[in-house]
Length: 202
Image (cartoon, rainbow, N blue to C red; front, top):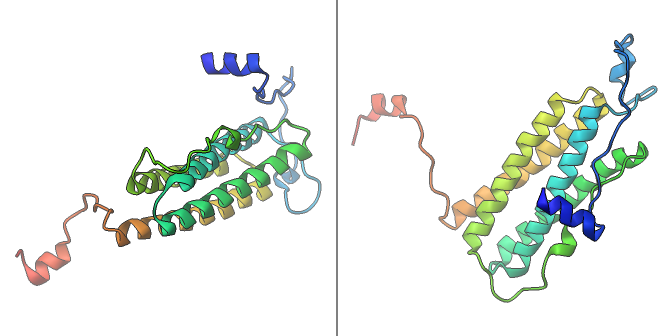
């Protein structure tokens, strides 16, 4: 709450969108409520606006974090991976913002301007920065899944599904980098019963 107050005082806080409160209950009468690709598109629902707004903020923060990591990471391979992630996050921000702007809804500000110019000494190891980036991406898949569940327009659910696939593949690239650098500790897993039956316990 204090952060919001300071941002308001400095004039950099963008208030979340407000929608008029209806005095009556309305029931959906036509299947066109689900339209998105063809035909008339209904206005965005409050839940759809909330998800777009939150996903813009998350991606903007993620893009700024990854940009900061890319400035100080030592490995050229990981640097290239981080820059790719920054581009993906910015692309997602742009596509989500487009939906809000078409409905005359204010878009949250980016966070890139808060990244310092430091590029010489990293406060974190390459391993930690890569691990943290992969963690952010996998959480993003979960958030997109929740957005699909709360959206009722076909074009919006398709957009989230497309973006989910893109960042899932990006996360997989990161895990491969962890494996190639011997940084990926295998999580606990179930006993391979078939292997025990065939080969027994060594």
